[in-house]
Image (tube, rainbow, N blue to C red; front, side):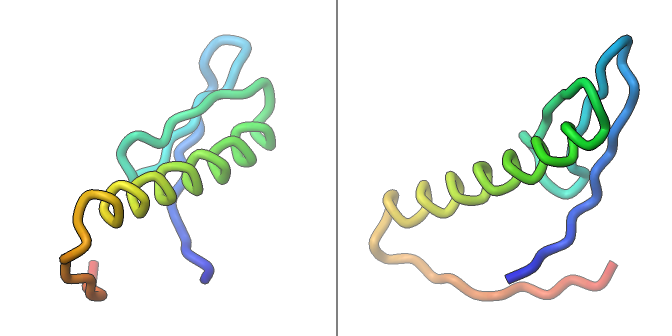
Length: 71
């Protein structure tokens, strides 16, 4: 499934720093903007996989449903 997120990349000295507006905890840096983009993709995947693992391991009985929000 494809999902879209908003990357924010800023120049910080000789490096670039990046974060994702929609997900807390997704931060990275790189020497180039392309490196930051790739690092953000990896970080997004890692955070989402970690969250899924956390909730499925924490309880065998839970409700999971889609929530739709219009912004």
